[in-house]
Image 1 (tube, rainbow, N blue to C red):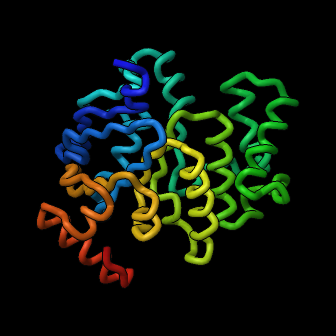
Image 2: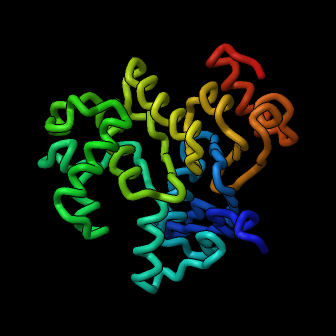
Length: 255
């Protein structure tokens, strides 16, 4: 198989249980270079858990993760180290260090994980903050930043690691409505520049314009996949149609 045909990332039959409750059940996703795949579904569907399993922030009970065709062995620190460098993660709640400035939040992983010297790490942090429109705020602490600015710092931090794919877990869910646009603009720029991404979101109008594929999840199961147009207006499964009809009603749109 040529390199071009190997997915950047594959999650195969991922299952995660908490006690007797199965949160994700035999879920599989494959993402090619430059793809944006969007996971939609009701709250509690397992979207966040699936993304966390893909990055081994949560260890799945069954299934496997392949990065560029190579299976990740979570028992090997070298494999996890490679996965964490190559798979960037953007969380709902930003996960910034409150005692560090925006600049230092971006720089710290470059220093500690990649071992880059202080000057080069600082210069890279500046470039990434400029890329997300925060150069003028680089010396501010998280408490001095808006929610949208905090999320843009977290995106800059992930980009500084040169990830091969980014996972975005409801990146706008903690934001006030007026701050959502600035974060979506950054994600749109990443999309335009070919970043490979998997994103869970309720921003359906934005996602429908950007995504290659929608993945509808419910009760931990991937119910249906397809193009945004198909899932939103011509879904095969009744539950998918019901969910999308409610979305169209809420947002006043049709596809």
